[in-house]
Image (cartoon, rainbow, N blue to C red):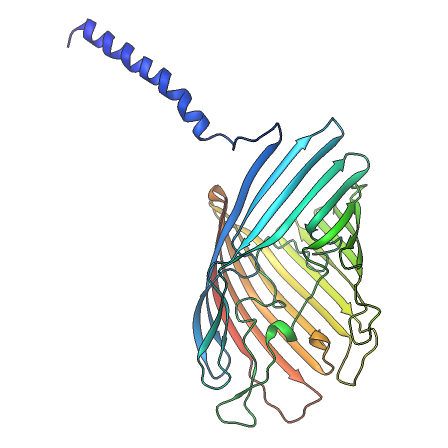
Length: 387
């Protein structure tokens, strides 16, 4: 090939590159909006395998995640002036496969809830002023939601043993009266709880600006209940600290036999070495118990953990947790305990993590004597990919 041919080829290639290169940029740009506001699409896909044993039956389940389910969200935001921003958020919970699981009362057959619909998690509009705070209107969390659950363990999306998740819907078995075991009709999800405050309801909510680490929130929900929360976030020497307390006046508080109010909070600390701990407490008294089988629900829990840097891909976080519930779900005499171990490996470059979890659930009812109730054991593996 002579010099003229080489030059012609080079010029042609350069021209082709110059024409093609600008085309590639818009293909990876943000979504085009109908106005000057910014729109961001994000979400996560979460799947889990877990093996459960109730003392008589065992089963491997394939489900959505622990507490972090698959979801997708659209976040819009805009700037009115140097002090005021506004936006809106829509978030859907995408549960398109079998979630949870339980065994038949005596046969050991498994049963699942097959959810094929999308459900709205959040749908609200907000306005924020730098000096005067933020107002939100729509379907979202009330003022103190999450305030009994704060930790600094770095194990997000993995509950402590207090909610209905993998194994949380399996009934405890009584083995003292029958050789094969009979169902108590009580599951970890009802006996072992940290109910927290009002989650995802119709509210008008106000959040103050942070002042020296302190912030407060107040909300009124669509059914008439009110909620308030106070939170502190800061650092004392080498220790990070977050503390919160909340109070909720529930909408049915003037009716006998219903929960009157909810009060609770949590405190979490983390040393710069990676060691961390947290404590959680909550009480839900009944307005006017209608029988001697109704009692005020009291819940507490504690965690201890360590954040390590073992692999270059991201942190490896460990946590041990314990929960105890007295009068679970308002039933007098019912006591539930749960403890567990979590190990989470993060993959920072792709926004993903893998978590290995173990749970042990136990339950007793001191109003019914001479009963032997089997523990429930669960081991699971959860994968989360965020986008």
